Image 1 (cartoon, rainbow, N blue to C red):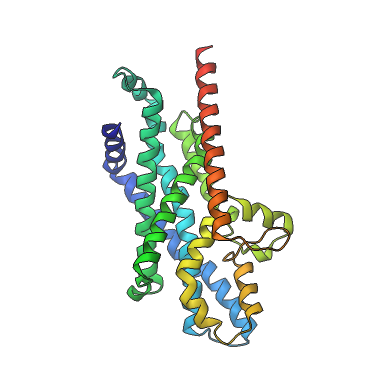
Image 2 (cartoon, rainbow, N blue to C red):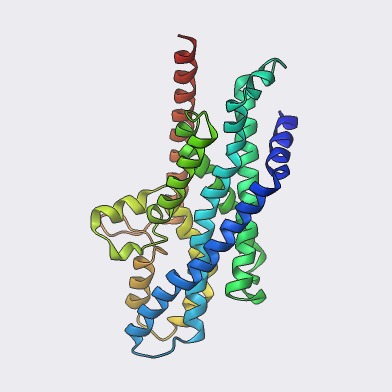
Amino acid sequence: MLALIKRNIKVFVRDRMAFFLSLLSVLILLILYKVFLGQIQIDGIKAAMDVNNAPSDVVTMVNYWLVAGLVTITSMSATLGAYGVSVDDRQHHRVDDFMLTLISPIKIEISYMVAAVLIGSLITFMLYVISIVVLIGGTGLLIGLTATLKVMLLIIASSTLSLLIVYPIMYLIKTNSQFASFSTIIGTAIGFLTGVYISIGSVSASIKNVITWFPLTPINSVIKQLIMEDSLNKVFKNAPNQIRTSYEINYGILLRFPDGTHFTNITILEYMGILTVVLIALGVVITKLVKVNGRS
């Protein structure tokens, strides 16, 4: 299976145009994010503070918020793009050739998934580094070794969950054209579903619940807490606690249950664990149903 994982990674990287476009789309997203979404939040803060120019600490805080959002979107889009190798193999019946080597179907499928998560995590972490350097500067990377390792683990978790979320549908996709259409839909929807394109505080209660409980939103929340901590402390140093809490709730740094209590890290870990088990079970069921229908 290890050989298959290496092969899947090489196939994706060997397609230089696809790999280049993956990186280019990330850079385009970074620029658009900075020009539009970041400026919208900064303008809102300037209006609230009744000033013409936002202090540098505020700009830095917003930029960290942008980085966290970019990481969440990229973990989904990059992982999904890497999993496209399996779709191409199914369309051209290469999977049938693998079957002749007596490798079990489940090992073949796992090799695609592991390769996609590795590639997606790598591209996402590259984006994380590039985004901080571009938006904040090299000093923005100095958040501490422990915090950086936690961000890396969260990126892997986000990429893994991203693949598990789309896998039941992806397994039904048989052609590259279907995959391209599906990727476009997911790429557009993911920013709204995680509260990246819109702030959680600006939507109705029902939509807020959808965003809050979407699997990637809690991970996005923890990443924000890790990388924004210092800038939040500086910006809200002399402000009442309720003002900081209000900002953190409105922009998805803190998540709340419908009764108003906040998510804790333990709550998020438990939720991620339950989701992972449920999504794996769903993926297994879908896989078996497709195989049974294929034989009949």
